[in-house]
Image (cartoon, one colour):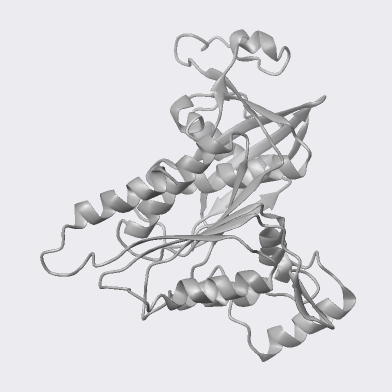
Length: 338
């Protein structure tokens, strides 16, 4: 079973998510956990629940109390999207570390969590009091120390099969996490149905909201997310000398006067503190000097205040007789060595 569109929304209703948690084998889902703040519900294109997570604050400790994905959609990226949303929310709450009890520790280890003894966080975990502990259930207690750094991954890898661009982006993100332990990864999905093109009605609404300086309006969610990022990764296949049109629609949504840039007597002044933007692309044919997508991204980035850019690209992948594995391996090596 594949999922074409995933929407993640915030919810204050733990009971909405409890059946999902129970079906995944999580314990003590009959009542709202003490210290529950809110949760996230991941929904597919039909509005069906695909996954969920519950965030708890116990005293001065932050706990990912529950996270689960429906069995049919495991391995489809739902858990990754959920966890990234969760960790960004914890960072926004001011958390310096996040604890959890993991039944699948390898998954969380990939995102920077490490094992601890439950005695290091007394009162947080009641697993040892459960009759299933050590028999039916053998969780690992884990923690992640957070920094203030945030990576934004603008995912425009719209391929219907295993995206080669996405493979390179995943490798870059793994290297980034090693170099920036404790940094939080945020994800913006540039795909149809998630980002909406600007028409006359939406432009008029945006102008009105800008005049009111209503920056918390949902219309500006993507722009606020972009402005928060310390590092940005844009992944997009090379299409028609640039990139898929949905990435242009995403850009229309983040270029907002007085939020991500402002006009001055000297011209435009960017308001985004991003330290570096990395652009990753793959092409079936040769790119050469016709790298218009990267040129455009750099132009917009400079307008928004970004000064440092880097590109990785693998080209000629669909040329007859091309050494596809060799081209990809060479690009991966460049990514892994920075």
